[in-house]
Image (cartoon, rainbow, N blue to C red; front, side):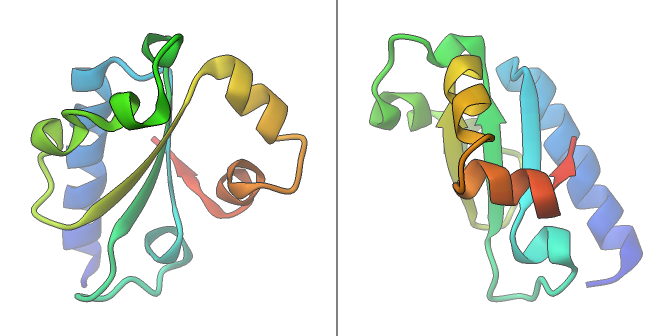
Length: 103
């Protein structure tokens, strides 16, 4: 994947963030590390006040339909409060903050 394709993906994810009204969106995993290939998915951590009071499964509902990417994506969804708590622990959130790209 060349730089032009990577920038296009970042732009699409930025539009996706605006479309879903996320407070914070972080791309992490192989895409952020730069070893993304045609068999990889994009790992996306989403923080939104809209997730308050919703079960984890319900937070995911509809995200794939709204995502403009023609690539597989894994979404991890947290409220701002959950995010603040988990970023202080050894967790997927702390890893995403360490290696990720905030959009």
